[in-house]
Length: 134
Image (cartoon, rainbow, N blue to C red; front, top):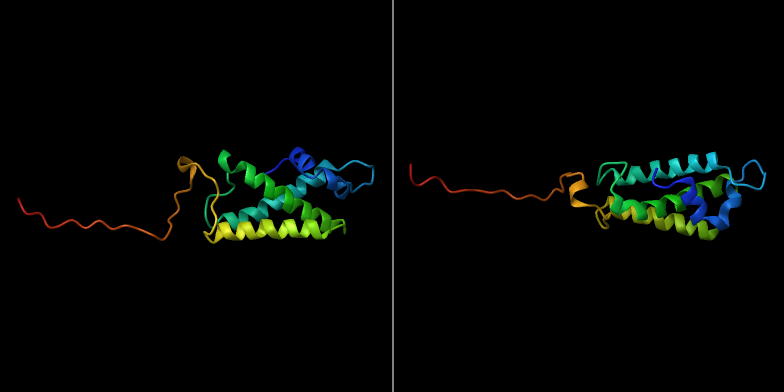
């Protein structure tokens, strides 16, 4: 997963009530974890066209954590019927960014040594002349 329950609680403190599914006044950690996994899976669906998933490069951790929490919040809010325009706008922005990454219009901050090495579709061919001396 690209974000932990504690990450979600820290990022989305103002939306904690949407994760209180048993109405005890506290967000349910297992529910949050399930939606973070769902968000991570959704993200992997977009990212898989450009890199190996799940992305484990530490340089990408921050941006992935951010988008994972926003996507999880959107799905949590829809399940609880507490969606807001703000939550939907943030979700759409995250999906837009993921689409841009998938289309090659945006890049993940990856270490060169950890990139997947997938072909880009652009290549170089080296042609040498015939040997003159034998």
